[in-house]
Amino acid sequence: MKKSKVLVGLLACGLLLAACGGSESKKEAANVELGTVGEFPVVKEKLEMTMMGPGTGSAEWKDMAVFQTMAEKSNINFTFTTPPTADFATKLNLAFASGDLPDVLFGTDTNSLTPAMEMDYGSQGILVPIEDLIAENMPNFSKILEEDPSIRKSITTPDGHIYSLPMIHRGNTAIWPRGPIWYNGDWLKALDVTELPKTTDEFYDLLVRFRDEDPNGNGKKDEIPLTDVKLDSTRPWLLGAFGLTDRTIEEIDGEVVYAPITENYKEFVTYMNKLYSEKLLDPEVYSQADEQKKAKGQNDQIGLFPDWFSFFTTGKVEKDAITDPMFYPLTSDISPDRVTPGSTRMGRSTFAITSQNPSPEAALRWVDYFYSEEGNDLLSKGPEGVFWEYAENAEGEQVRVFTKDVDPTNPEDFRSKVTPDYGIMVPKMGYPDTPEKAVLPSKDAVNDTTFSDFITAETEEKITPFAKVTYPLLYLTNEESEKVRDAATDLKTYVEQMEAKFITGVEPLENWDKYVKTIEGMGVKEYVEVYQQAYDRWAKE
Image: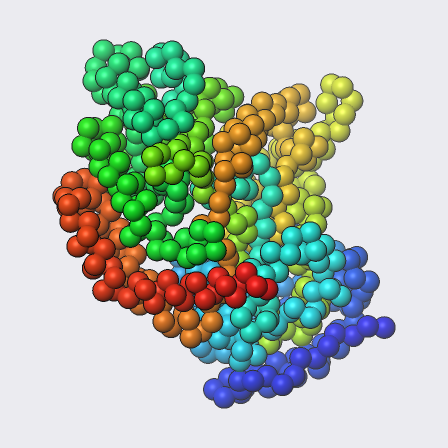
């Protein structure tokens, strides 16, 4: 009969002595007997644990069907502490400082449970290292690590430990680091454009036509060829035309560079300044909010715009959005190769176990279910009979449909009360939805995959072949983090300000050398050296 190991030898019991002592007695009192690995129940006798995570305000976690179902399946019952998302990072810091910690952290991310916190509290024994427990207790996650060894590298700290579990993405949009840029298909049709631009010169020419040839057909010069909010979404896609993918450090063929002082980046801001000065880029790009951008889209005033899907901006119905093609990556004189930004397809630090936990093995077996296709489905949509139920369609097939309590015009509102997998990062493998698992408004509804097929085709043609991850997910050592902390903040602020000034013409491009010297004086050389060292260490593993 297998029993949970008792973790001893905590390295830090100074101010947290009482908490550490309480943890040991709690474990000894639990005397946990585990079930068969990979099967339910997780434990043979009911086990109480505590969990802390960010609440989105939709519902209390104790009332969510996902957690209630998991309690029944696993024999583990959680008591929850869920501060609002906006306050969560602060509350988590206070919990660590006081030693009043839950057994499990769930739904955290690198903004709340930072890499530095993981290594700091992990080295003190406050967070439990789990690398030696994964193989025996997490068959689903172990299989994922075997299929993609880079995941293990990205969640392993420089001291060789794994202190948290990730959210991993699969599916046709998993490679997107953010929403793409979309063309207004109606404008393309009005101008008889049958082939999308493939170079920066062709792109410029099309934007000029958008500005001058009245593609919305209202007889007014109210067309805005390209829009965004502070270029935050458009920038990575257009940077690709100049051989870059982000406005920060970037790894190129094993060499780490600081992109904002490269000639490639200079060419980018020069090009964007040209678009701005000729009113091809929205004059309100740095002053408008997303709501204003969407209002322009619904008024048929914009020819090119970023969003997760185009109909979020245009207001079209989903099936009509297949006429709005995705931006095709461009080349330029300085970069003959097509490049698009690619996602690491993973969010780190979504689940961790503290020294308070009576059975780390049981907690890992519990969460491992979410790394299976069946577990992901439960976490995403909840159990049968709450958000969805089975019904027989006209062909006699069993299909999933919304329950009577779900408003089919706003199903996400109801789903947010069923699962924590809404608006936060959660530990799971996000498998792509299949027609069999899709939830339809009614048994008579047809599972129309036209739009998802369109998205898949556009992604496979225009992103996947050219995608590049800017810099791998990795951990800096505590010493490295200390070296770059202040410089990272100062550089980010300065580059943001100067990019906007260069593009709008407030700062003449003739001052580029002065700008570069300022950045060099802010410690960028040491900053890059730290990330080069971290990359070299990661690449050798």
